[in-house]
Image (tube, rainbow, N blue to C red; front, side):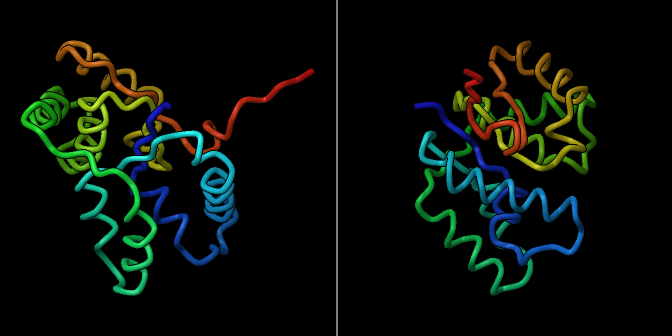
Length: 160
């Protein structure tokens, strides 16, 4: 079974009230569709970074987010993941302020996750950034997961 690392933005969209912003509302609906129809096809995992991020903010909303992920496997941090975060930031592939984004990638990479699911298209689901991060991961001896949005991982289409 393939593994999917759920990054914070996906979890936030799953729990948030429907947005009036059409793009955000569409992302929320796609996230719900993925969760309902595709989640069971994968082993879904998170990290302590995700826990820390979803625990922040409004107490009621954070409780909903934490409840949603309580049955998911938690990938532990490791010296290898910490070293990969440092390599990504030192290579200036991601800015220092995006160190948590580097941590999402590093933990998923070190644990051999297949997909990193996110709506963060600035630092994660961004083809140019991902290409540069992949080179850093390769130099460190790791295969980076495919970073994609829930829309890209909605399943295979059979055109018969």
